[in-house]
Amino acid sequence: MLKQRAVACSAVLILVCGAIAAPTSALAEYPEKPVTLVVPFVAGGPSDKIARDVAEALRKSLGQPVLVENTAGAGGTIGTARVARANPDGYTLLVHHIGLATAPSLYKKLGYKTEDLEFLGLINEAPSTLIGKPGLAPNTLAELRQTIADSGGKLNLANAGVGSASHLCGLMLQNALKSNMTFVPYKGTAPAMSDLMGGQVDLMCEQATNSTPQIEAKKVKAYGVSSLQRSTVPALANIPTLSESGLPGFNFTVWHGLYAPHGTPPAVLNKINAALRTALKDPALIKREEGLGITVISDARLSPSGHKKFFDSEANRWSKIIKDAGIQPE
Image (cartoon, rainbow, N blue to C red):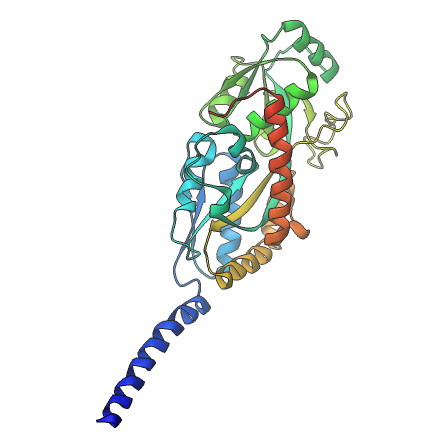
């Protein structure tokens, strides 16, 4: 009888041990199926283009398809909330830009907290350009600055919606100029750019990845680049920075990072970070990004801790900018 009980107990222990060991084995096999990369903005925009480049490079690193899913709305907060609520198994990831650091200052109710996400590494950063509609009278930033001041806030500045990169750049620009402009929000970059080229709005501060073709084709007028250094892209190389043109120290870059739901096992996070590091060394990806004036990250910000430290500094910086602009959370 005792022997039978011992055998039964041994069988139970084997089953229990097997149940405990199974997740470890499963983690070792990650990924076993396609990974979904959520972009919280519309298809065709700058963030979507970058995410698709990263998805292809990650596919090579992970050995599984990486599917891009656009879940747009509310300045990126809807897609972010979707990832924050997803099963923390490494199969649902998020690519988001600078707007993730500003959202807590812009929205009262987000549907998620920053703590709901795991930081996996910064991907890239790129400048924006201050562009105007065709035929806008000023030819330099100094002339434009005077025109904005003289307009008494009537000159308008288009953006892709609250929390978008173009909105944030516009806020920083207005603070630096110490002159008010009329902000005109759109539901995405494409309609805003279309109206700018059509002359329905006056100005826009748009990511260089999206504005460069329009500048090159002379469909818009360029007044300056938002980074401290001039762009290396041929179409932008002769355009001065806003800093050197009368707004000393003006520095706005749009960066993107990779995130996972909080609680994703460390072993999986490590695999994804390793895959990201490999992906960002992909020559094809680097060539495409650099051709658009985008810097692929290769410094300490590529680590989860470095990413989080940088994110916190950006969140603090933008909290002050948004507060100084008198913007109340929606």
